[in-house]
Length: 101
Image (cartoon, rainbow, N blue to C red; front, side, top):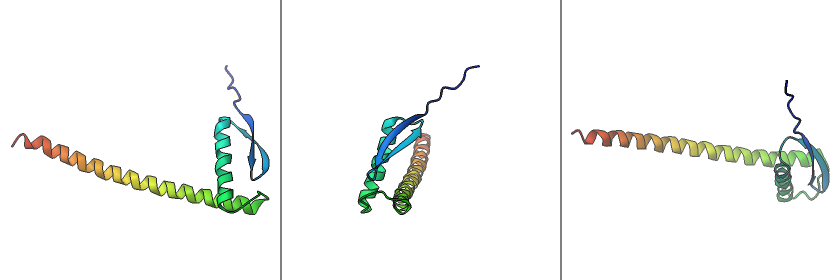
């Protein structure tokens, strides 16, 4: 029987001036990108250093807010695409029957 190879690795990142080691199966660049997002949120929130739970909660709220905004935008786009697709299908169906008349 083949055993699944362990793809976890340890990636070191700097967040809020502190060094963290993350154990992940993600690519190192992906983890570094996440750390950059967190550092950007720290900076835009006016947080200079990452000292503890309060900063983590503020950053988590900011990122959750971005996630909800993007989900709302995605849902709106999906609704628009469905509506436009329905209109196009109705128009195509009508065009097909014009040739008969």
